[in-house]
Length: 596
Image 1 (spheres, helix red, strand yellow):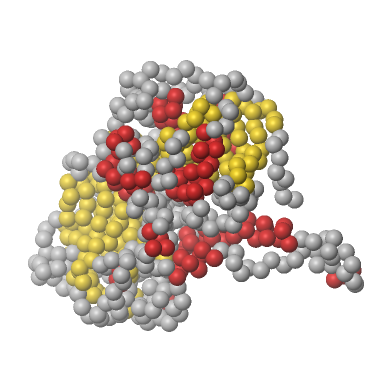
Image 2 (cartoon, rainbow, N blue to C red):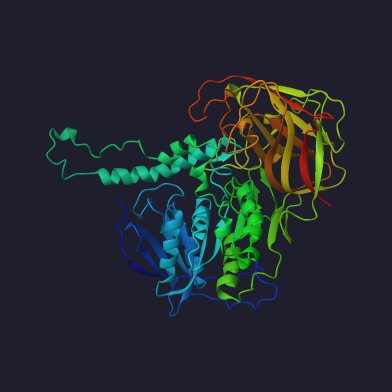
């Protein structure tokens, strides 16, 4: 049975202790805030009516005490009840926490369509929350993934009472880095996420279609329908729209965050993760908001933390995928956010501006480090050039990497067959269990294939730290009018374990622009850049740095069928013979930020 809207009140005893660890983002010079512990009052399904009459419902958790308190707001499509544990913790600390189902989801009215209504509904909800009798008028927002989108989309509407946002593992652009990457359709994410969301849409439709009174006279009794079967048509119209808009056009630009940075006028505490599917957007938001946010205070108010896992494993985990990252890896991200909001909403105005703004987990050494900025100013861009005698196919081939500029060398070739695509093994994935695992997984099976080129350094004699953006600079050709080129950075352990670090993809038709695709001329050489996003990893002595180059990573990305036809409707496949050139005239290289 569906839950009925109500305004039930209940008392929840809840106490929190003072956090023993120093705040991740507490000001070095700020006075410590007094420890607080309140019992908590909870109101279910409180209605906020939008300007078009649609009623959105929220659960409100607040201190059982007189006075007014700052508000922390989460607007989610995933069922507001899922935020109960954190809401009780934050309310006991002295916040009003409002967890709202977004339009068309669970207890809220209206029709669900991703991104479409979040700016307007977010604006109105922030202002509604600020006017509640127990609110002090300052509203912060929090949450991850799509719930990060609800924050950014509200922020670009700049509601007057929004004081800050804390988006976790979310994107900067819902075309590139969300639905597509490098022009390839993020197939596993798009399909699994859409299926998960459609379940609630289908349930709402079934509940709305039941008509026992109208069915009472149906004879024979065996013909009683029980439920009216719900049609699958229209369950997720946005999925078809995504496929109908493979280019970066006005459909995507209307709600792109990075096209509207100037409208964001509040501090942002961005939370990302190595191995997260939206890492690129998280880093881009921090880098560009520092210079493009709408006010000086918002530009100076940017903060960033990067932990391990994200959608591939939460911040509380020591082990992500097949790798144990040590006892320092787990982090209480809820505490970090509350500490930040204590400084922003409760403490002095400059409380969170005196410490280093960036905190990252350094893999390999498996330790946390505070930084003055991201990317690291001291990291030196270094080219590791691709080398071979023309037989870099697979880990047993002759591919190598070094800082020596190539001279006369043979190119490497492989046949990419869409009907036998290179399988996805781990990496930045969402959503739900993936058969080959999430995050860091052993890549040896992938590297045994003839259609994967492998280039590696010799074993390092001392530690080598890579921290920052990673780019693959390639000279390529194909026998097809369109194909993909993929890259993957790998840490090869002395025991043979091949740990994937970060990866990327470029669909050749988008080599010059994601707005205006251009098919290739078979056999012509093109200079392309494949964005592998970023990492922070120390290649320990005895380890090797390895690069994989291929043309598929399926089903993380959809298969390029090599025909140049519209990818959403194409079914015809052809094989492509693809080439990577690495000689004096075509110095293909892996661009790495090396930390001295």
